[in-house]
Image (cartoon, rainbow, N blue to C red; front, top):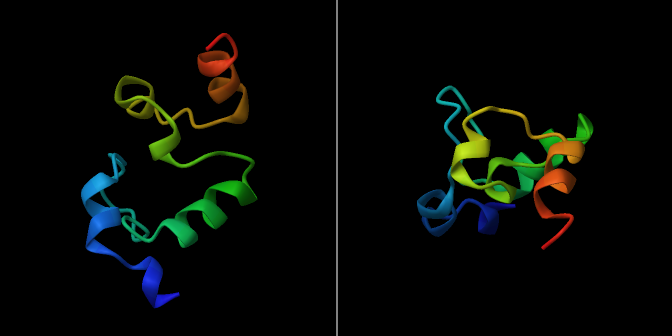
Length: 66
């Protein structure tokens, strides 16, 4: 999993949750959120990400008509 730990990932990460230990480690982030049936911050536009509502329902409501 060391290939997942990339500075490139960190540069693109829009997660605003400051104590997060998974920033830039996409494989761990995705696995963590999926356990709660959520999606990571990078699946959401910045204004939505800041609400911390990363639910599947929120994702679908944003993209269903696009």
